[in-house]
Image (tube, rainbow, N blue to C red; front, side, top):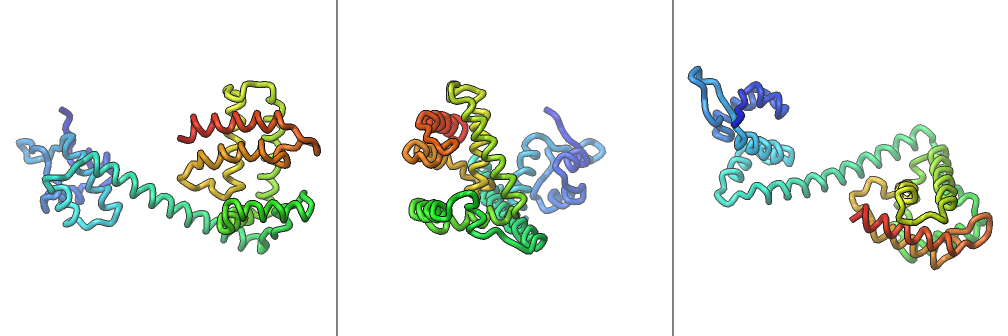
Length: 256
């Protein structure tokens, strides 16, 4: 079994030697053994215990509380790791939200202008743009629509125009693949791009929820509403069906 010196463990875990000495002194992390010269040696069990100590510290537990938790005879390492994973994911989601808010503020301060509703739906007749917004609000809720619009506004005019250009490019490439198998690697590669672009429009690119059902449901919407898959002003039901199959397959194989 491999053993680590206090310096080796400190470097491996990203903590100071003084910290490991403190943990030894207070009984939180004792070395597995000592050399004849009284140098500390740590084994695998100590590495796992130190990992738990650092996880709990990251979650703002005191050293005293950490010691009580780890010394509990009913302590379950696997359950603890699963709990840490969930807590860190929640923290990550909060941080992502804060980062998105900061980005929006920076863009606003730099540009001193935000996109209006009319600019968000530019390229569509005014009545059509208003109709899309009302239908989306009714189907998904006003808050969901407003969140998506706020995310788009935070991009500024240049960023939003780039996103729309990317959307058109992806749609053109998918239409060119109409005769291919929707499940093929070539089509699925483009569908992955479509998925990420769609999440940008939804304002959910940073969300931990992969939205498998929502994305597959969008494919169903393409089939039921020809407005979403019109090319050069013409309806293409076979294109809508192609997208529906490709998107559902992507959702079932990549998002679950």
